Amino acid sequence: MSPKSIVPVCGTLIAVLSLLPVAGMAAPAAPSVAVVDFYAPTPVGEYGAMVPERFAADDLSDLLGRAAGGRFMLIPREAVERAEADLRWHTDDVLHFARLSALAQAVHADRLVVGWISVWAVGHGGGSIDIVPGGGGGPITGAAMIVMQVFDAAQGRIVAETRAEGNSQGGISALVAQETLHDADERVLPFLLTMLTAPGL
Image (cartoon, rainbow, N blue to C red; front, side, top):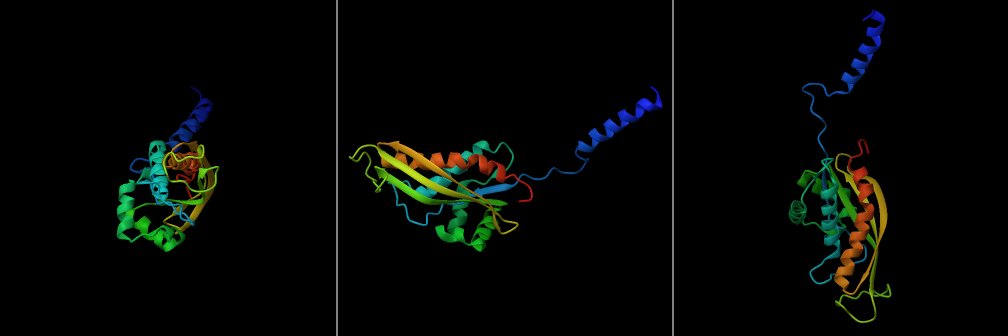
């Protein structure tokens, strides 16, 4: 092999080696993420044993856990709920960065997912609330708007926000309420998967 042919080969080898991790250097740890109970500026009520604010958080946590693929570590909702109880958490604490920082510290989360149910209607004809399963008056419809935020613990502030609508229809109010929130959660999932792993937000 002539000296001239060695140069490009060496250059290529150096370029490849530069992409490999240096021995002894650990890869950056996956961020830890926790989902906080949702907040509703206007109370939405309860549907039997189903509390919409808590259901929406549990459902979103389940969706994130199944879609994480090792990109982030999801803190179990049970741990979040215990920390909320210890901190005497109120749903409107999501409005205060100091309280969000305290919760993030308690569960060792790098980022918190904070959801608001800003619009809520479950009933006949898209109007009044109907919590009686199978009540008369035709199909029960559900409509919701959720605002989704990502709180970064290191920066102590909201670093990303989006919103999505959820809709459903059926014969039992509690199920319609769940399906409406699930529909909205699914719509914000792609955004969250991007934002929760984005460096330098």
